[in-house]
Image 1 (tube, helix red, strand yellow):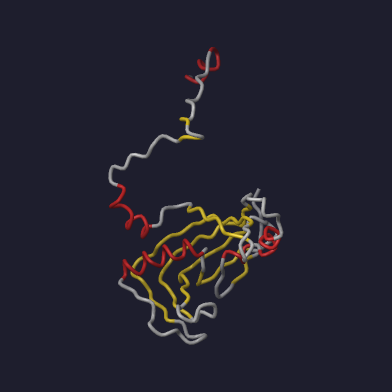
Image 2: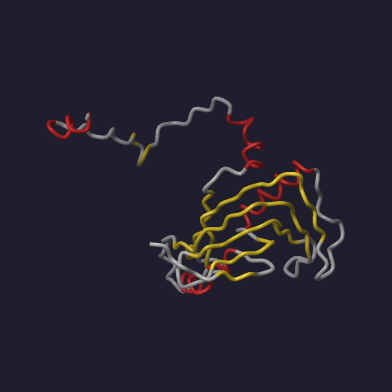
Length: 196
């Protein structure tokens, strides 16, 4: 079944725009609640970065990703969002910013850009991104925190970390100090039927 939903066009968007009502509900949860609540998926292509006026920190310009992006909320009653600028959760945003700046020899402007007059830098490649965005209650002043899962490997961060991986052997998964048990083998007729 295909779900028809409207598309809202915006000049920019951030993860909170996927479902502001869900974030408000999560903020009101008790501090003992640590469940993750899905907001949706953000995907698209990065073509560059945009440094702009930052009202929250006058010592550092804000950085938006520029390209073509779409955010699709889990809530089917909310519209999808398309925009040429996107802000991701701060941890992911900072990692991508560092990788893009390093790979393209970019530096944030020394002076804070004037309000409404961002400094844009296009890059020579097109970087695909696709992130699943969730949220959970936090006892901090904001009242919530984002949970971000990458659904694809981003070229820039993969390149930066590749030299450390090499022939890295990860340990077997453990839980409570014990190795996870091997799956049980099927027996009898069920095992025979699987071989067909």
